[in-house]
Amino acid sequence: MLNRLGLKRDRAIVRRDLKWGLAVCAGFAFLFSVIVAVQATVKGPGFEERLGFPVGLLILGYFLLGGIVGILLGLLRPLARTRVGAAVLGVLMTAPVFVLMGTFFAYFDPTMDRPDSIAEALRDILILTVAMSCILGAPTALYYRRSIWPDE
Image (cartoon, rainbow, N blue to C red; front, top):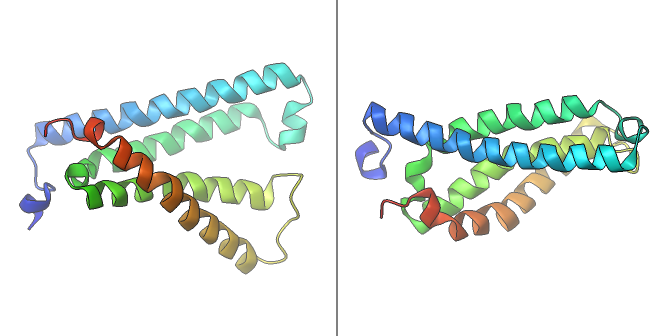
């Protein structure tokens, strides 16, 4: 069964897939870090105060999350062999990003009202994560399916 799904692989292939996943996610982390750095530069010294935490911490978070998602992406790369698998992979890979975004909006965004309870915050984060992962993750993975699994 594992072999049929492509999950039973040679160590060299697993290493190649892990390097690929980490490279993809490091690229996204770098891109988002540049965007935040440009925003911080353009908006001036009050940017971190309005943000609610240091820009460096946000950039570190991008790379830590990119590392975690990159490892998962590399390990689950064989799922992208089929369209359904690619869609599932897209949802799974974007979910941690939207959990982080939902947490940020729930607790750190000064323009948003703070949730009344943990249950309300978790509900909102779950709704955001499921909706956005399905809306953005699945179609993006399907679009990039050939670059995810170029061997076919």
